[in-house]
Length: 435
Image (tube, rainbow, N blue to C red; front, side, top):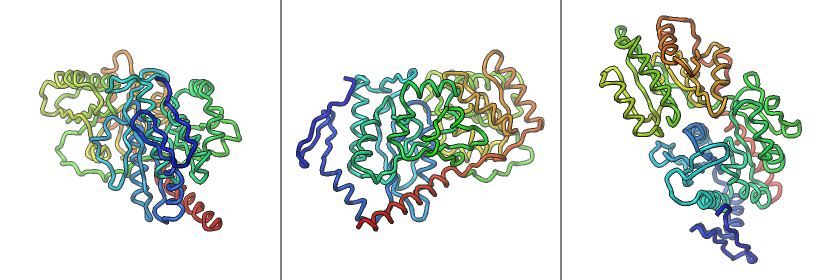
């Protein structure tokens, strides 16, 4: 089964059954619109996060959600997420969540259910129905789509078409991190998937979570002028940094090692522990965060490499990376968007070891940040443990490395909130004029 079964509804009272246990009541469309126009309550924002690999999309959306919920006046926020850890993650108060059955990306636009034995087509259809049902029932003022304009494997297309046809007051916005992959790769994927026509016809705005001075997405991804007019840079999205923690004078430096979700971070942890054993063991304390998505077998291997050393702490996950950054003297990490931005915000010295595949994204980001003097980079590959150990030695010995957010705009979440407030106030004035 590759597509959701659809049922034509000839009467307003009819209910469209997807055949997957999700009832779509057409009356909810009109009642949802009426509620939005008459309730006068908090503007409704939906955040879509496909979350098929790692934690990056979830963390970025939660940073935006937290800001929107803390604004005065606050927004009403619902997160549509396929993250496999959403059930155990600490979430902002008052955040509503629609959990989508998790899938995992196995190749370019190829996915499989993460846990279920059901066919992928059936799982995709169920996700698609849940998304459409949520939009119909709540009629959001704004739908912010993270990263994937068509959604996972095109699962958003029916919802986007519905919004354009039936909910003209809903602003549909795409949020993109600046560096997605090599420009050539992004251009080809967008050509194959028809992304430019999608942005032209179904999206009202495109927000870039970055700065043009760091990476120009219009030039890099060959975005035509008529689409580029919808685009604006809002700065990097980061949670607020935690004040630096005071350290006892005689305290050994603390090295934080993190790899985001951890599905592809084993190589970094392995290299760090091997570098530790042959170089700086006994001179640092190590806090290794494997990530909640690293397999139990690989975590067990890391425990064996640590050999019970009391100066090595290995934990599966942290929901408060800014706090751990504040408690550290040096960070060793991969080059994911959220981790990199939160490191820069913390002002802590960092060594980035980007993954080599499947995307060039992390290598590109690490190179840009290194050119700006914000981090040091160690390329993956042969003898990475020796080169990483040498870099750690040099940084701890005081090699020049500038920390802090110099040259980077880190107010992305606030700028998103400012835009949403302006849009919803404008919408409210238009409704008053109509009524």
